[in-house]
Length: 331
Image (cartoon, rainbow, N blue to C red):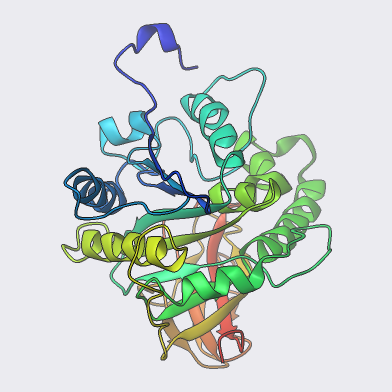
């Protein structure tokens, strides 16, 4: 359990720039995961340019959070005490450090209209953007700003566009609940948490739940020297797209690959194993062997697509990998 009194050096910090002219309210966050520092670097570069007068906020406002999770950032690790980007919501009785972050960050998000959340990833690969669902009035993630998210995503400077996160996560939760029913009181705390539908809610999902729109930009591999430049360019393009700085709307990316997450496959046993070292966006053909269960059961690709977020170190009952298929959202 985290004690604020025992960690006086940890604090939350946001920096805002506002124009006298009305306009959108943008929030840009970095280091939601402490070992993902490209967003922090990109944010600080943009702030330096604003302070130097090289970028001027001519309408609306922008708030920067260079380090959303200072404990994880201080440690150089993904999390402080848990993953901030899961089950993100305010709580009346904070226990873990990320609960305190949520109690500060969630109200800040609610004060804004648009969120750009900057991340990086562990394996090799190219940058990509994750957006919300198409407009809908469903129970999982009702939404009405799909056109605005798409327009912004096309101007970040990356070539891969992904949706379908929360609806797929919800299907995974339903399967986990069915599995837990067979375990009875043998289920551990991690398995119970992974069967909570709110566990799939992170920064962007929370932002949409309070009436805004949002996207996660994965800027590249953690140590890729190009990743901070991807973050910087995305921030500047977003400021221009929303009209917060002068210069006109950037040209949209024309050769965008659109993918939809359609399924999540959990690890059932600790000894379930992949057939090869998979990386996000490796291509799959129908019938390809993805892995083998502990009891010898093969796991095949049911359709053509790509694998994403493969996790060799996943525990039993946790997400092992996700599957995507081609989408027509940006055609």
